[in-house]
Image (tube, rainbow, N blue to C red):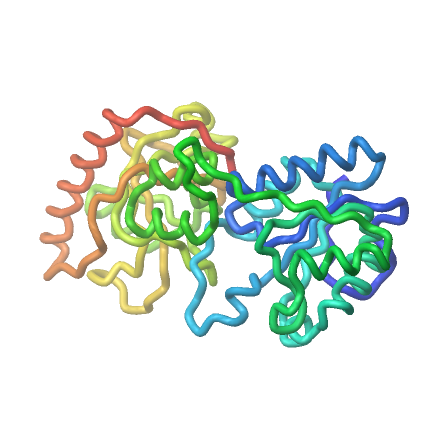
Length: 326
């Protein structure tokens, strides 16, 4: 059974011992998947609990002056860990208190007292503790004192030798190279959420949309895109494998809105169904252009016609890739 805990203080979450991984796990890319798979396999071999220690917000986001683009929402992160077979997740609140915790206290209070770690898996560049003072060598020295083993997963690379990392994936997505990003992620890049009601202006222009609010999430992409949309239940269930083709806008809609709220708006081609309140997943296939402000609705409508035609053409020439459903 998958359980999530947020606090350092509290009873031991794995009284019979755990095998655990530590990391941010944003996007759960191929490197993360390999790390978690090792944890699950070793926990099964040793009869221990497969566990993860992660952070929300991410440490990089806490220290950054600018909002950090995220590859996955918290919901998507949790869903991925469930699918990977993790049973215990200690999702620590990364705040000033945690940032000031010494490396020794982190090991003693989190890894030993809270998780009873018997085997810990980390990446080769793992750092922890106040001012990132702890590294893999320091963790190994502490392991002897506290009775756990340290295992290091070397960087995972693609078939052509490229190292997989969240920062690299963010860069490829920002450049609009979704095929490249999919090779690093191990699946297509998607954004999922629950469809909310909008202003219905798209319907008036001949392009009704399914709208997803992003809240505080900062996506690594913005602009106009060719997409495929999936839903586990309801009218989109027939597209669960191939995805329903469409065109999407992700941005602040400068021509029609002034509130600056980011929104993902998706027009599904040749689809007539009610999606309000349903969860959908939007797979990004190709970027068409950047978002721009038009002189009026007529100019916006003319560009939407061109975008829709371009998206149809791209999607007809691009094989569908099945992805996880939100």
